Length: 128
Image (cartoon, rainbow, N blue to C red; front, side, top):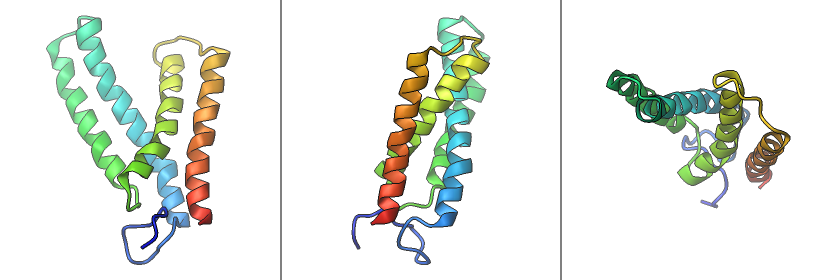
């Protein structure tokens, strides 16, 4: 098998419309779960919240790992690389919406560059 963005299932060898659709809902949910899980540890450690914050944090991180495993690709590294851009965008959104810190133009530019990189990986693999 060539080293393209292949589906695990035998029904498709290349990135399919269904795979692209899964990226559109799985990656944002995974990012939210990862950020929420990491933030619970941040709140416990840095903001001196109760250790009880660690339980939902660990559950959220487990949800993140499970969601990311649902992406229909044969190579985890490529799935993780594409996810990286989505994670960065979600982190900047978290900064703005949850932490009430307005992103700088550099935050936004960096986010766009990362999303462009993710798009190149997804679309380039699809073109092969």
